[in-house]
Amino acid sequence: MVLPSIEKQFADSLKSIARNLEIKEYIQQSPELYPLFLSSAKRFVTGESREDGVSIGDQLVHKGYRISLEFIGENTINKEECVRAKDEFIALIKQCSNRGISSRISFDLSHIGLSVDPELTFQNLLEMAKEAQSHGLSLMISMEESAKTDQILSIYKRVVVEYSNVGVTLQAQLYRTLNDLNELLNYSGEIRIVKGAYQEPSDICIPRSDKLDQRYLELVDLCVRAGHQVSIASHDEAIYKQIIQRGYLQNSNVEAEMLYGIRPELCKQLKDDGLPVRVYLTYGVEWYLYLCHRIAEYPPNIYVAITDMIQGAKDTSKLY
Ligand code: FAD
Image (cartoon, rainbow, N blue to C red; front, top):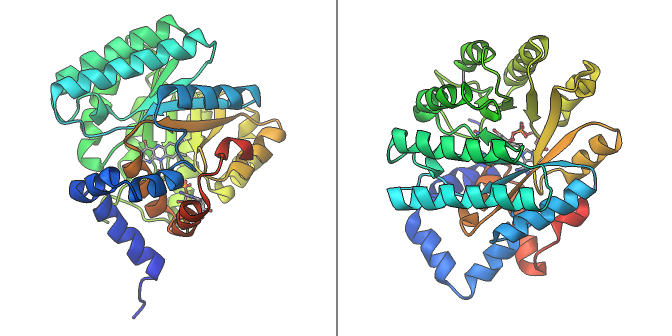
């Protein structure tokens, strides 16, 4: 019998703990725990305010990176909060524009209404797309768990026919994605390809494996052959080796995209080789769930998190 490693067991528990509201509130209200967890979060999150995100984004743009910015949040449960989240994204778009930063704005549709009302989500998204377009910025819709895929793609398709500055993320791990991509290539919006962060049933999902990596590359090949704009959103060096061998990063439709705080040395190396690299930056008070996701998807990060708790927050931006 193969026993799961302690790290794997920890990651699985963390996925449940992350969604436990009582634990989250306990940590956020504890004068002892809150600063410790915030120190760990700061490796992956720019800070709690919009200004934190925009100013670190500005620094990275000056170092030659492209950026995405996200105001962290998901599964908003009432209409007022969905509208507040949409207003924050509009304010973010305006602030980037005022500072002359050409950022992509990234977000979950469940942050702006998907768990409350699809029509509200659509209207919020339209308003954001219009505002972004008027400032020459783009939006990127993240992909959430498979139960939401149909709804997310259907809202995306309604919006992208009016606003081609809106793109969508697809998860290579879902078997359905090959068909979805073939359909989405008929729309003009950018496609971001990720492996997939959610635990899904095995009959619909390819686990982390060579097979998944092959599927990932197959999806990229399809985008490139179709002359479609595509973002390779991964921290996997083996994937980048293949992408570079195929000459894709010299193609103006293709870019690499990585999360802030993860493999900054790989970002820097690709950027210094003259390849287009986008760094995905987040900000907001909901950093706790984001931190748990980053540890759960790569359990050795728990040691990094504990070190950051003991030694204090690092300035991740200096690593780029
Ligand atoms: P993996 O096979 O998971 O990892 C490959 C290697 O990368 C690992 O061996 C390790 O060396 C390194 N690595 C990976 N993760 C970490 C980490 N957290 N810390 C340190 N090293 C790490 N998922 C969604 O489901 N929906 C989305 O909308 C979505 N948007 C994303 C946007 C961006 C820009 C990125 C980069 C990822 C996004 N993800 C999203 C997450 C994605 O699905 C994967 O869970 C995540 O990228 C890890 O997969 P990987 O491709 O890096 O490869």
